[in-house]
Structures are given as C-alpha cells and as structure tokens.
Image 1 (spheres, rainbow, N blue to C red):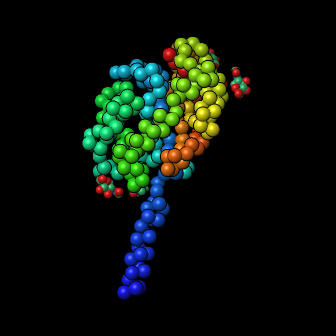
Image 2 (tube, rainbow, N blue to C red):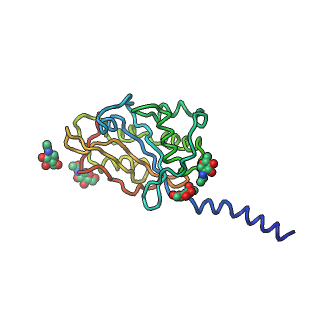
Length: 219
Ligand SMILES: *[C@@H]1O[C@H](CO)[C@@H](O)[C@H](O)[C@H]1NC(C)=O
Ligand SMILES: *[C@@H]1O[C@H](CO)[C@@H](O)[C@H](O)[C@H]1NC(C)=O
Ligand SMILES: *[C@@H]1O[C@H](CO)[C@@H](O)[C@H](O)[C@H]1NC(C)=O
Ligand SMILES: *[C@@H]1O[C@H](CO)[C@@H](O)[C@H](O)[C@H]1NC(C)=O
C-alpha cells in the first residue's frame, strides 16, 4: 500500500518536470512593425496604415537563436478563444493587408502553438498585448528625437540606444532597402523576453537586416 502511494506521488511530481524538459524555446521576441515601413517593404498593398507601431507577432525562439514554428498543426484558433480581447487585438495587432482574424490565426498556428503548454490561446494573446502596452516604440524613439521623416536619416546606434534606454537590453531591428533613399529603412523592431515572457533580455542578432550606419524611419 505505502509503496504504491509513494510511487503515485512520484508520478505526480514527475509530470511537470518532463513538461519543462520538453520545452522547445528559451525566449520570446515581441515583434512590432512600423506600418509605413512595412507597407513600403511590400510595395504598398496595405488596407490600413496606422500611425503607431503595431504588433506583428510574438515569437518563441530556441536557445540557438532559431525561430521555432508550426509545433501543432491540429491546434486551431477559434473566434471564441480571443473574443475577450478582440477590441484590443483589432487596435494593436491589426493585419495591414487582410482580415485580422486570419492574421491572428496564422500567428497562433505558426508561433503560439510552440508555447501552447505554457500559454493557452487567450494567455498567449494577452501576453503579447501586455508586453506591447509596456513598449510604446513611437514614444520611446521620440524621446531620443527619432521621429518619422521623409528624408532625415538616423544613426542605427542611436535607434538601438533609444530602445535600450527603455528596456536595458538590445532590440533587433529589421529594415528593407529603400531604393529612393538608397539606404536601409526601418519596418520592424523586436524586443526579447525570458521564457516566462516577463523579463527583458537581449535579442541575439540585433542589427540583422539593417545595413550601413544610418537608416531611414519612413513617414
Ligand atoms: C518540440 O518540438 C518537437 C519537434 O519539433 C515536437 O515533437 C514536440 O512536441 C515539441 N514540444 C513541445 C512542448 O511543443
Ligand atoms: C495539439 O493540439 C491538440 C488540440 O488542442 C491537442 O489535443 C493535442 O494534444 C496537441 N498535440 C500535442 C503534441 O501537444
Ligand atoms: C553613430 O553612433 C556611433 C555610436 O554612438 C558614433 O560612434 C558615430 O559617430 C555615430 N555616427 C554618426 C554619423 O552620427
Ligand atoms: C548608393 O549608396 C552607395 C554608398 O552607400 C553609393 O556607392 C551609390 O552610388 C549610391 N547609389 C545611388 C543611386 O545613389
């Protein structure tokens, strides 16, 4: 009797440990897009261009800095899963090119499923919204006198430093090539978090797709 009891207790204790061991990611990146830049980068086919950074995705990342995607192809998002936060998502995580729900559904399928054991669907979207609310990138850049402009170029180091000033950690910038300005132009900023999504950490490849020393922040 007592052996059996001890054994079942052991099983109960062991379950959470094996879940932790299976975790496929070691950090999250909250990616915000600068709509004007994003729309330029895809040559302009946007249905709306909000004048603030909006959420592009919340990506689980492996310890080797690789993205992890499509972890459970049978776990689909339904409207009921997110209806409690739909208003916030529509305003802060809009699709700029199509239907919002499809965008969220794709985000869940590709990325959210990779942390589905730690964050339910609602929790995953709430995590993104909460972290987004703590990082008003347009305001953060403005504090460093970095504002959208048609011609003005900004030192990449100053853009990184402005975000660093807020998070104390390195962001990851993404740029497209502006043919008219002949420089890299900003369309995305990623901010990285520990695996619980709560504390900032450095993003590993921070200059990634921005080339040169100066970049545009398109208006
Ligand atoms: C981790 O990924 C592997 C294969 O990529 C998959 O079989 C496994 O279920 C994943 N684990 C979790 C916790 O998502
Ligand atoms: C994938 O998602 C389905 C539906 O939510 C779930 O029943 C199943 O356990 C998940 N698969 C894995 C490997 O976690
Ligand atoms: C850009 O920033 C770096 C580091 O802050 C500095 O060394 C460099 O002189 C700056 N370049 C320009 C063109 O302002
Ligand atoms: C673009 O910039 C590079 C230097 O960064 C310069 O060599 C090249 O001539 C420029 N091209 C145009 C079309 O201005």
